[in-house]
Image (cartoon, rainbow, N blue to C red; front, side, top):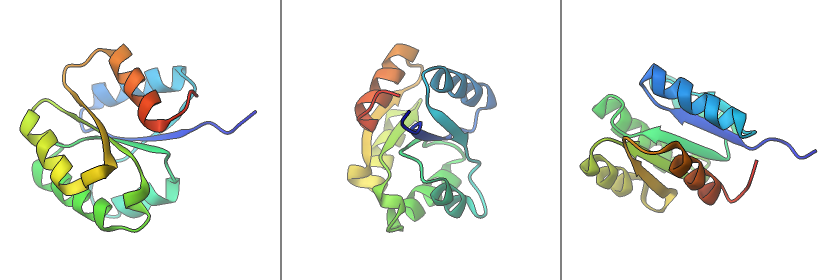
Length: 127
C-alpha cells in the first residue's frame, strides 16, 4: 500500500483546523497542523509535506513573515500551497509573496466538496 500523502495545515481557528483535519483524514491523508511562530519553518520542513494549506490572515504580520520565509527557503518553495482567506486582498498578497507556489485559493466560507476537489487537483493525487 502506498504511503499516505502528507498535508500540513496552518490555520489559526481551532474549530476550522479540526474540521479540515477530520475531513482530510477521512479522505485518507496524513494531516498535521502548525502554529506560526518560533521554529515554525523548520518544523514544517521536517514534516516533508506534499501540500501546505495556509490561512494567510493568521495574525497578519506573522502570516506575512511565515510566507516570506517559506518562499525564501530552497526546500520550502517546492511545497505547493492552497491559500484560504476571508478577504480577497489577502489572497492577492499571498500570491505576491509566494508566487507560483500558490496553486489554488479558496475564499471563506467554502464548501467542503470544493475544498477536497482543490486538494486533489493541487496535490495531483487521490489519497
